[in-house]
Image (cartoon, rainbow, N blue to C red):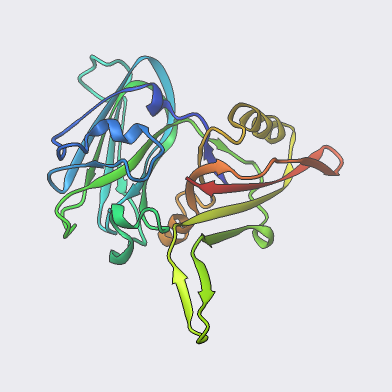
Length: 270
């Protein structure tokens, strides 16, 4: 079973993007911002996005954050060593997501903890100058595919998994409650967001160095994509513990055991 995976350097930010037909004002450039209200929306139940680079990128996974995908959606990826190649060096097609209830699909719900992650982990990392990504969701009753963010890149996977008894996902609700003089409760509805807390109690020398590099380079400003249970047999479990966000607290590393370090991460969804 795979352990925690983190995509810490989003190669999509360096790519030139193009796509199949999109709705007016909702084009492929929206996939490069960290605003949930910026979405790319296809005109059909299929969306193809092509990303190209001037130099080869190492890729271990392709993700779309904040989508309206249903449980039957698929994501297919073709990776090409060179931009002009006719035959991909690597191809894969998987079920894109799971756990997408109709009530939390669509951009109107993204600010309230909604939005489904569509993910495709590669069986092995590849180097490529072009990837062609297609989300197909023929059964989507909304009649289109939409996504808020594209994430492409290599990932770090811990040797030892997160501490299960000390790892949690929290739904933070910013809504405000008040009571009237008659005793009725009033609620001002405000955005909600998720926070993943991860305890890593056994970091060996390699994991310590890799995690420290991520913390140093990303800090609290640069987002990461993480999956606590990548490619888990229970797809809904992975969906519930995937998150694209930023560190919300500074991270301290301790040394509880000889030659092993420990750290706790708190990541808030953007």
